[in-house]
Image (tube, rainbow, N blue to C red; front, side):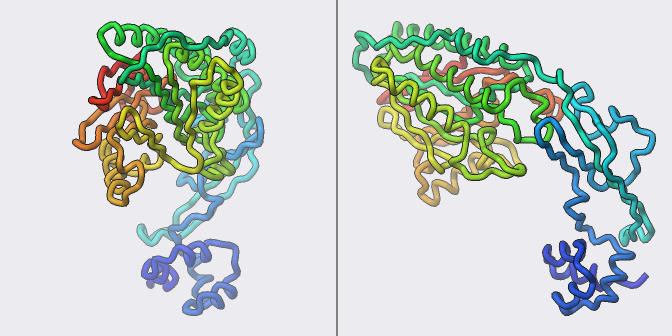
Length: 432
């Protein structure tokens, strides 16, 4: 078989627009007029015999949800799904038959094409199925009852001696509403346990001579689980977005109410995560449109109206992916980690390569004495000389999919440490 001029042009020009046009519904005549170098007869022959290697958007696997109803597009398959039950099809594409069901076949297409690599005709198969969420797929959670149980009461600080040390508490990757690891009830137990340990830890540090008068709470992102981060996420949450936000705001306020009376100054510094992103068709709208920032802003409004909380201040990012703050003369840089988290390589190399670029370009976070990161749900710490890298663990219930995919797992926890005028990072302890 002779070489196809269209395939050669796509390959030699490396032009994705040409490849997309050839695979589109444009007529051969219009394509010939647009590109000039290719005749319509050649295009017709290519479309009849060749595989362009550029699938149409309709040939890509996807799931689209509108409330409890959805559509599963299988994408292009090498083999038909003949003989498979609906449950088997759901499992094949990563869905739990106990949580979602197929309500019918919407479309199927079977088409032959010429494979230049194998020099023979092959088949490709595509299907679309209607999906529906089963009514009993999420446990009943009375969010307002949980909030009422917190019984928030503000107490003004008393007799806090002036000191040279700051107790730092990292709140990140709570992902409230996530079902795994026991869901919301289990998160409440983890949070309450960590906060009780924080109270005891502060007392213990003061007994051994740490002169602590300030609390710094870091909001490191992914405070809520969200509902649109991955296609079947809505079947792995026990609270919808509004409930997640309301519960998280109340939990933030609960933690601040508990600890604030122990300090003369409380600062809350917040960066956005990826789970809080407001998304349309899977794409975020803007960096600032983020529920990880919103929950702290709402907590700030609630706390700001209480005269017993006048010593609590907030510094919340706007459109930035990172934020810096001064702690006892040291520059702390805070980011979630999704900004550099994509691509190959281990976590340490990802953050180091991103950070050295920020430092080279004199970005504010590139001046950090301590760089605090999140997103990867495990504890890590490395001294880079002028900069100390601190990677914080997560408070969520874990991920069985990640564990099965990588073999890795990390215990949930809340990172704490102390900063002094002479030491940027000491007395590290993970509160379980």
